[in-house]
Image 1 (cartoon, chains in turn red, blue):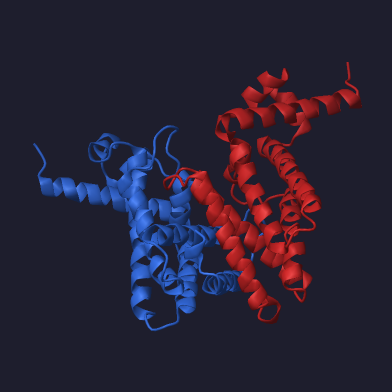
Image 2 (cartoon, rainbow over the protein chains, first blue to last red):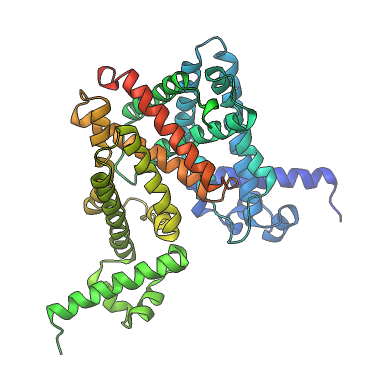
Amino acid sequence: MPISAEQKEELTQRILDVTERQIAENGLAAVSTRSIARGAGCSGGSIYTRFSDFDDLVLAVNSRVLSRFGSILADLRESARNLPVEQRLCGMADAYLDFALGERNAWSALFEHRLPDGRSLPDWHRDDHYRLFAMIEEPLLELDPKLTPAQAAALARTIYSAVHGIVSLSIEDRLGRVDEASLRGQLRLVILALAAGLRQTPPSGSL
Amino acid sequence: MPISAEQKEELTQRILDVTERQIAENGLAAVSTRSIARGAGCSGGSIYTRFSDFDDLVLAVNSRVLSRFGSILADLRESARNLPVEQRLCGMADAYLDFALGERNAWSALFEHRLPDGRSLPDWHRDDHYRLFAMIEEPLLELDPKLTPAQAAALARTIYSAVHGIVSLSIEDRLGRVDEASLRGQLRLVILALAAGLRQTPPSGSL
């Protein structure tokens, strides 16, 4: 009996939900076609009528995670709109740390997952990262209103990457843990120093 | 026939050399006990008379890689000792990018390799990372001579992590490649802004 479009969509969502929950609970490395099929009550084959392969499914779940963090940044933008730009940037870095700590396995999966050699990230997923970088452009343009859109985009991505580096090398427990209060202090220190330096010597002239 | 201490040491070095070369050529994921044994002309079992397990061997190779980068930073320190602190910090960030690009697979293995759950990085390997962070303390102390040793160490680690984040999110090809000249420009911009901000508001007072 052919299944309806609605049933197809329901199955797609169920597979995504189960994969997301399994990654959150046990980490990406513990998730497999078999564990997902068992959790979703379907066959492995029917997963791949909805997703072209396992990587495609993981990317779809990772995009959900990015979009959840995007909503947090968007809310923050609303609630912090009257704060000085330095405080808004610090708030975003803090939110990144909160998210990484609070959704540890989901966050790790964003960077742990690797496509097979020669295959590049599909545009739809990459754009979900870019949308996050773009949230940082607005405060940067207040620090230096002469930044071109390309300069603002490049700098936003760089600052996002710097915050990511500070958070990831600390919480991955690989190099000795930095306690959370110190880590927040370090993030704040670096963001404030960066913002002061960008105000003092606006990079639009030199970039 | 029992083998001499000299033969044992020769085998240890040969296993390290082969593992290092195989990681450099094909990446960590492609290296196995079997490929190393074949390359070193010994049995898998004899590898594990020298190293307690595969992770231990990879960490030993990673420590060699860190120590090679440490020598580069030490040479830089000598040759740049008369340059302003900003230029010395930029030179170190540049050297990190050069190393990551030039020894791509070896560098990736430093961060790709994960110990099994519950096992933490041995001190001897962690210290090899710490020795690199420490190289950044000297220029930071020139920017803010009142930093305590603990403050200088924390800030050096944070700046190292920020540079690592900028380099790794760009060259891992995961989020769309940033061309090398732009990446160098971004690293320089962030380091100069940070240094200017740290000079303007020395963090020793607020940390």
